[in-house]
Length: 153
Ligand SMILES: CC(C)(COP(=O)(O)OP(=O)(O)OC[C@H]1O[C@@H](n2cnc3c(N)ncnc32)[C@H](O)[C@@H]1OP(=O)(O)O)[C@@H](O)C(=O)NCCC(=O)NCCS
Image (cartoon, rainbow, N blue to C red):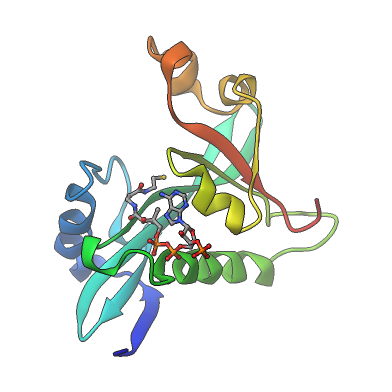
């Protein structure tokens, strides 16, 4: 298989990221291209994922956003490579006293994240972490699972 490069995204990657996300009716919300990592094959972006810092009251936490792999390349380990790249980046900064390696996600694909070591959280935890969940009229019917990855759990 042609080599796939995982790298940090730059400003110039904006359109490629938007194109990838739009396949799945996702948008960039308030994210910048620099918040993303990309999977690139022959100079073309075929996967992306973003890491952002969220806040919940006094607490801040890292959250995975907007992971998408091009339809033609799904199921080939690219999503896993994007996640491993992000997790490795975190672990560089991690210590047992300051576990910045905790990572949260709200997702409709829990099976993918379970394979990476994420665990499902109770729905009630979404209310503690995300203010938009608190204000959402679809909360009871929401199909997104809250999940957490922690190097030390
Ligand atoms: C979810 C997604 C990013 C996974 O990327 P990918 O490159 O296809 O995933 P991988 O090939 O690395 O898969 C790793 C494992 O997760 C499993 N997996 C992949 N997508 C899955 C899903 N949606 N649900 C459950 N398991 C899934 C794979 O079967 C594979 O299992 P295996 O190791 O037993 O073979 C990709 O399918 C995608 O872009 N989906 C559409 C957008 C989306 O749903 N994003 C998530 C919203 S948070």
